[in-house]
Length: 388
Image (tube, rainbow, N blue to C red):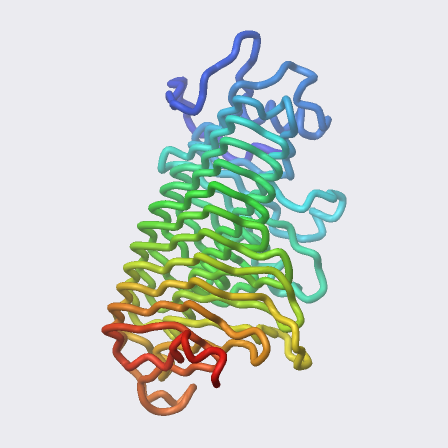
């Protein structure tokens, strides 16, 4: 990691309830962390309490913090970390992300509204079908992690990925990438539980947030989603997702709003998912359940499928630009059940040429109940499930 421009560094150490400096630990400035990172052992100089990125701009090469290297660690960013723009410069590194925190506990990553990490993904996007792209930040198998007040941008692939982690807080984070950048998801928890995503602004080229298989007890609230594919569950092919609440979210010009996507032939369970108090402005498809997810085409009809049940859509209002307020497409053999739609008002702002004229809901094998829904719901009452 090479320092690019030197700004005046501050010596003030911010306080945090998540960070308690331990005796005999040291603070590393980012150029020291870079040197030690190339040696691949932070513990060679002691276990750091803080890695400090002062004001200025610094070239970012992949950094890995693992186990004792990231216990009670404060990663303090008030400057700018910038990844190499040429994918060829990255080939010697086998890491799957630029910043990897593995088996950490009591980790805080804080930007104080000043710090940023730029993945410079433009050249990666141009060759996305040929190259395996790194993610920007992975939190792997970690506990008690918070990411706050930082700007992440232009990742070659996903921006933040909590994997197999628990007690994760992502708050006041800004994530940006061009609307046409491929697979640049904002935040994608996978196999994780007790995750809170709060007060974030996300505009990307793919899912703003996607809750992946194996997740449980996830809360997404008080967020603004701009360009992107919306707030998704999935895609799910196995395992499943349960106990997710997405509430008080504004969608502006996104391709989708509330979305659940599963593959045919899959297994597992998606249950107890709630979308509450969502504001839609010029959203392509505000409400969507798709059990026939097949982004690249060529999928065959199969009788097996992921079970989807106990889904709530409540307090959703605004405008759609795709001609359809919502699509709930479920499997013939594994229908969606116990869907509840209430207090929904979605208006059309387009001629509907993409999906057909009018403003309506479209359903297939979707069972549940609806009240105060405009346009009218197409759900089949649950009591008719065995008689259709």
